[in-house]
Length: 252
Length: 302
Image 1: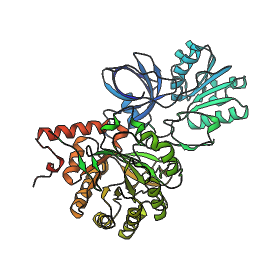
Image 2 (image 1 turned 60 degrees about the vertical axis):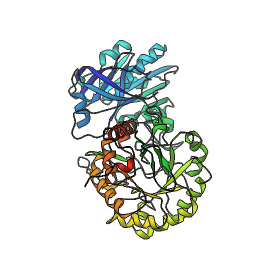
Image 3 (image 1 turned 180 degrees about the vertical axis):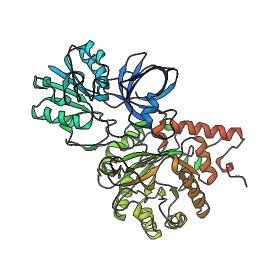
Image 4 (image 1 turned 135 degrees about the vertical axis):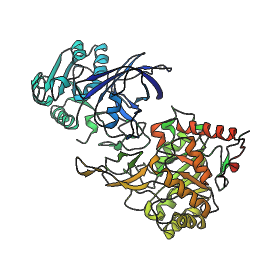
């Protein structure tokens, strides 16, 4: 069930110069069950120029804690990254439908930049389900490969950086591990990356899911602003039918 | 004892004056997790057309100072889908169910009204002659007195329950359009729909919206909406339903003082999905603190 909840900011960490990790604790309500790939609509406190909430992927959640990994993309996300421990934050969650968590065979989780955020929780869930998981993380440069230690603790983790400062030198979509066999790919990242991964997966007939980040207003399927044109239903809300879509539905 | 009930014309009494604005609240059920929908004065569902519509291409929305522009373009699955699949799910919510009706031609509007008239739990229709985001029909009907009168008169013949006509603010004198709707048989008018606006991404040197222009809503438009509601309330004898940038209970009172009999809350639902209930509670407390028993006592002081 979706709900509106107040949280305490327990910890606020600056990552890689351009990112913030907010560790939140619910104040009064009990944490709802959250599926990997779901998101929250996050209020932006202390910001004169924003009006709407910001849709942010849930990076990690358990009964007591919820993490949001935020890229500084504008005034709203800057204000969120600038929050300090002790601040209060209002969230509407959990929203959308997440990644498939019952998948068989060898699974690749691919994240680009802040797109790695939902893959942390997805990796944890897939491992708990005894799935064979490999991670491939991409970023512009070494210090923007976020939460690398946490991914490495989970399993085989490959890295690509645009400038070659860590791992494979080049786009994540050119990493040699992609030549190996995978049965299922889950991906979240910038649009050009997701389109390139979709092309690769279609060519090789790999089952593949993408997490989209279309601009949203309501987050609950009421305003119809965030639509994606699908092959089966035409324009559908990314906030309710997504953010995760099987590439079979996308007209990419 | 505070009584918030109000008659908005055509014999329809709302339990309180707070409704949700069309296009911002889906079919109500999207908000069922957050609030008790039966506490609302009314739910005005998404604009419904005779044929299904895919709406405009993405991107359809951009945030602006204290507001947002949208260019959804009346995406909906059509009136037949509505009555078969959506109406049965929402018709038993204990609130006034209002269907927003839109079309390109007069015959489209009439067709939707006729199709809806068999479903007796629809308390009212809101005739949308004010959508700024469609190429045909929509706002073009609401920018002339002749157009407003033509749609209103034709729908009046096809619909015998309460009929609200929703007006666009993108006109020189909204009072003339309101009077035309009244004279053609409207039971009430609602205003304002969104203001036509535009925003450009200066980095990409392109408009943000696929349609270039879109409708501006949110707190940014509230003072203009209050002024227009105040003008129309003096120009017509039928009830006026006020909307435009209401963010909380205080703003509801502002519209009621301007002469609105009821209000609609729209964009604010995106920011606080419980805003409607908070506004109802605020209004109740506001009245109680001033020993006002009925909404007719809530008027601007001279």
